[in-house]
Length: 314
Image 1 (cartoon, rainbow, N blue to C red):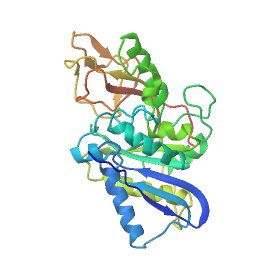
Image 2 (cartoon, rainbow, N blue to C red; image 1 turned 30 degrees about the vertical axis):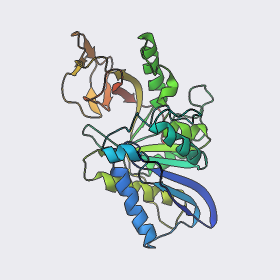
Image 3 (cartoon, rainbow, N blue to C red; image 1 turned 45 degrees about the horizontal axis):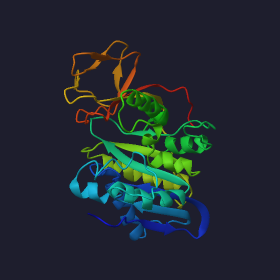
């Protein structure tokens, strides 16, 4: 088992924000790792440099999962990501190192990819609010950065959708039935006063994914003023979506009605899947399916549903 978490830190001599970029939080999502490696090569060659603030690059966040070529090491690192005085597994130990790093930065860019076919997209946090679930006060800054990362699809609603899913789990007497299970890197970053974006760089095997990650890192550095790099202008129009719910797989014999990919359109009444007992799962309203996972384990997220978001950008 790996026993260290490797980071590369660049400190500018001038004042500015501190950005941390994560790759391979899940071991089978390597687009971010490759994009970070390209940025590191340019910095090491002196092609450009950090002049202000700070940049921390973590090419492989979960080295055990990365070495195995699997999504998780011993569990999903991006669920219930919180420091603990009683670490039980590899991911708990990573969290105890990673959470203080996040808290010491101002901005997080977390680079991912996904199993099913689909185009890259950005996930942002909630609107500014002082509620109990995910209070936040930097939605404007987060939205501005989201517009410059490259993809033109921006998704929000993660924690509110997860809270609904947790209620259903609780009603069935299942574990991980509270909203805190949905806390990952970006949610933890916001809880510490920063802001954060997840960039989904496309399907795991998409050869274009590393380039998506690389360009987004350079754009984030430029937009935050860390280096003397001109940011590319935002390119719209943007499609704004909100996750509204998450549906768990309940049984190994639950089956999708067809091969879905992220953001396939749904019409009210469309058959999405069939439970093992023959009961249908149909779309209640028009929307999109997100993160459909035919390999999901029973009791875990199977797919999400999204609808158009009324929130502006930024």
